[in-house]
Every structure is written in C-alpha cells, then in structure tokens.
Amino acid sequence: MCLFLNCTWTFACRCNSRMSALPAKPGLRHSETEWHSNNHELSATAQHERSVSNVIRQEGRSLRNETNCKTTWGESDTSRRLSDRAWDVARWKEALETCAKKVDEEMEALTLSKEQTEQALAATAVPLEVGSECLTLRDGRRGYELVLDPVDEQLKKEVELIERVQQVLQQHIDKAFEQLCVLQETRHHLTADLQNKIEALDIDISCLSLTIKSPQISLKTNPTRIPSGSSTPQEWVQFSQYNVARAQEAMQVSQQMREDVSLTRAQLQNEMDAQRRATEFALRKRNHHEEQARNELEWQIRTTEDEMVEMESDIHGLDADLQAKTASLKLAHTRLENRTSRPGMDLCRDEVQHSLISEVHQLEATIMALKQKLSEARHSLQKLKLHHSRMLQDLSRKQEALSLEQRSMNTRTRLAPTSCTDKTPVLLVPLANSSGRSNLQLLAQ
Image (tube, rainbow, N blue to C red; front, side):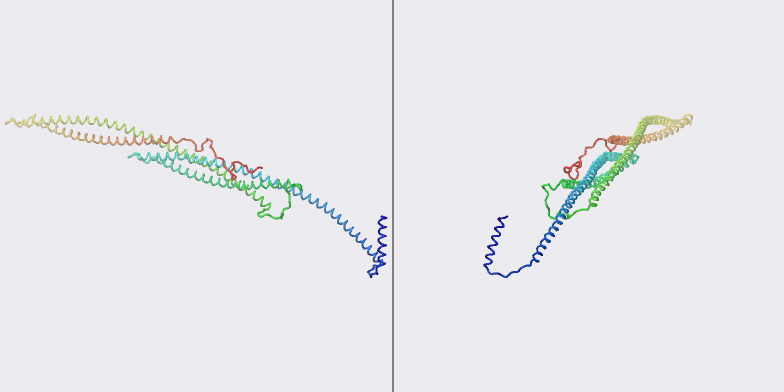
C-alpha cells in the first residue's frame, strides 16, 4: 500500500512539473457543491439499485418457490389425472372385453341353432320324398281301385305340411344368417374400440411412467395443438356406451331368435309327427279294408266257380233229359203215325189214341220247358263266366293295389319317428372375429 502511494505521489509530481512547464488550457471546473451533490447522487443511486435488486431477489426467490410448487403440483395433478384416465380406460376395456366375449358366445350359440335348423330342414327331405313316392305309387292303381280315399288326403296334407315346414325353416335360417352378420359387425366395432382402448391405455401408462429424468423427453413443436378428429369426454363415453348398447341389443335379438327357432322347430316337428301318424293310420286302415275286399272277392270267386261247375253239370243233365224226352216224343209220334195206317173200322180213336195224343202234348210241353230252362241255364252260365272274368280282373287290380299299399307302407319305414333336433353333438367350426381370432386375443395387454 505504501509502495502504491509512493508511486502515485511520484507520478503526480512528474505530472505537475510537466503541467507547470506546459501552457495552461481553459477547462470546465465543477464546484465543491456539485462535487458533493454528485457523490450524494451516486450513493443514493447505489442504495436505490441495491434496494431494487434486493426486491427483485426476494421476488425471484418467491417466484422460484411458487413456480416450483406449481410445477410439482401440476405434475402431481397431471399424474393423478393420467392415473384416473387410465383407470377409466381400463374399466371400459374390461367392459368391452366382457361384452365381446358374450357376443362371441352368442354367435356360437346362434350358429349352433342355425346348424340345428339346417339339419332339421335337411331331415325333411326324406319325409317329402317318401310322401311324394307314396302318392306316385298309389297313382298306379287301376279301375275302381283308383279312388280318392283318406290316404290320399292325408298324404297330400303331409306333403303340403312338409313344404310349409321347409319354407318356415328356411326363413328362420335366413334370419339367423342375417343376425349373425349383425353380430359379426357389432363384434368388429367392439374389437376396433377395444383395440383403441388398449393402445390408449398403453400410451397413458407410458406417459404416467415418464419423469423429468427420462431420456426420451424433449421439446416438441406446437404441443398444445388440438389434433384433428379429437373428441370430447362425453363423446368418448357415448361412443363406447353406444357400442356396448348395440351389442347388447343384438344379443337380445339373437337370444329371442334362438328361442323362437327352438319353439318353432318343436312345434313343426310335433305337427309332422302327428300328420305322419295320421297318414300311417289311414294307410293301415285302407290296407285292412283292401285285404277284406280281396278276401271277400276271392270267396265270391271260389263260390262262383263252384256254382259254375254245378251249373255246367245241370246243363249237361238238362241236355240229356231233353235228348231223352225227344226220343220219347219220337216214339209217340211214330206210334201215332203208324196207327193211322189201320184199315176200315179199326182206325178207331181208342184209349190208346187218346193216351198217345196226351203223351205227345205232355212231351212237347216238357221239351219246351226243358229247352227254355236249358237256355236260361246256359245264359246264366255265360253271365257267371263273364262276372267271374270281371271278378278275376278286379281281384288282379285289388292285389296290385294291395301290393302298392304294401310298398307304400314299406317305403314309409324310412321315416324314423325321431325329433328333427338331433341329440348328437354337432361339430362346429370356430367363428373368427374381425381380427381373425376365435377367442378374444388382441395385442399384449
């Protein structure tokens, strides 16, 4: 310090000596008052600036504390909101998964009901074929056997019933297919919504795990922008609610459809069984009547043949008697004619003459009666033969008709009295949802 002062004094002395040597220059001189004012101003300004600085420092510290609290609270509040949002998304994800699983179960149940209905429809092919074949067989009857009997009526009713059953079952199959398409579409919307929920949940959980020390954080360009296609929370909830409500409505319709189809199948099967029993009863009854008619006709034929044999025998007897009576008549005629040759008074109308005349009249009447009776017998025999031929023809038709009835009954043995809803398990092909999976297996959760 002393060295510095000495140097300063030496430098001042040299300057004064030089200045004393130089000529004096005019300059602005300040007064002592100005000097004191300047010093006071400098001190006051310094004091003011220090006060301002102190205030700024205090405000800065307060701002730091306040911003730190706000930042910490903001991060905590955002994390809480992210956690709540993730919980809401997870809750809706579970609801969508549950609904999608129920839709899959309902689709499998409706598919099973549809396949059972298709099996019931396929099972009507044989009864329809049998009924049509029986009608065709019975159309082969001839003559008076081709009659419109109760069997024809029952067979026609059976065919009409089966055709109506096929139409009703086909309508139910078409409706089930359409409903399966609706369920498939609903399942597709649920899957898409569920996929979005899974991705959103992954993003929110990833955001929740980020901290200020995470290496992947950075400043982004315009991060506060509103992305196009953004939805409000109300729209977000309404969208999932709509998907779930639509799926539940489709499942209710499907359940009601399955109940209706099951009831319809049972009712139609009962009608078909009742009609089948009525047809078979009419067929057995008709077969019994035809057997009775055939047996009666066979007895009539045998009786007629016996009568024809006896009639032929009697005709032979009548003819023999006629020949004998003709010979007797010839004898009587010859006697009468010979006795006309008696001469003179011996040509007498004696008792012999009267007896021969009476015998001739009697023989002529007898021969006439025998001829008439023989003609009647021959005519009766001819009628018996004609009727016998007719009965033989009718017997042939009856036997043929009876054979057709028997073939019809044998044909109907193909109809098994079992329900069209088969109890055997049905092998089902698993239905694939919109993502191509048979079960609800989306992305890793």
